[in-house]
Length: 254
Picture 1 (cartoon, rainbow, N blue to C red):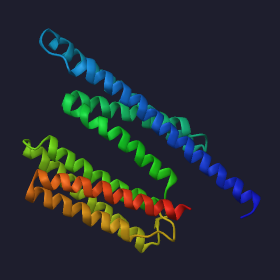
Picture 2 (cartoon, helix red, strand yellow):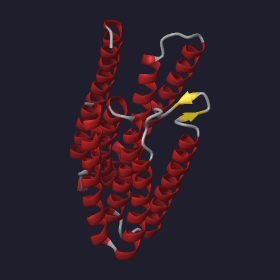
Picture 3 (cartoon, one colour):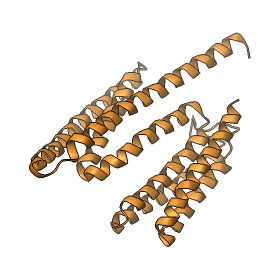
Picture 4 (cartoon, rainbow, N blue to C red):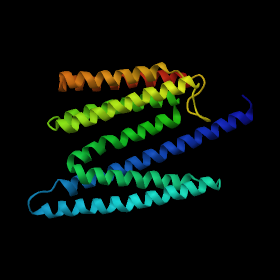
């Protein structure tokens, strides 16, 4: 590797690190506002019921405004991309405002349970961003499927009595898992390419992605059959498996 190649690699690594820091910075700020919302917005009772309703209305207003701003940023991003201009800030705005709109909607609809979900979801998304920018893409696909399993198990534990919602979440996660497996098969068939876009490298290993998908489907089936204890076991097994895969791909980076 000559000096120019080392410089180009360092610049790519610096850009990736800066983007990861942006994701983590945004996650910290969002977690702080969720903490405030949980403390002063939803955990109120008695004479403060009116305040709770006011917070819910405010969340819908904030979510609507953020959604409009996100759409505007997407349009700016498309326009900048067509004229080959800078797309970083419109893209950042679209992701930021879109995330705020989604969080506001979740908190307004599901209130306490929604905020608890966001407490977990926000750092998980930040970690997935780290994996996407710093690791191999196949590890990102494995981690994404692991995140879906954890979401399904969390839903089962928290919303066990709402069977219709649990079944809906499990069906959605199963459908996404199957879609990931089909997507992986298509990529493998075309040597990592999707049309003209290279998604995975030529040396990518597809077996971990298939195993992650199969494991996800097994976890869903076992949890539905055996109940909450199986959900705990699946959570522990998923976290342990992701840790092992992270070690494996970290070693491959060295």
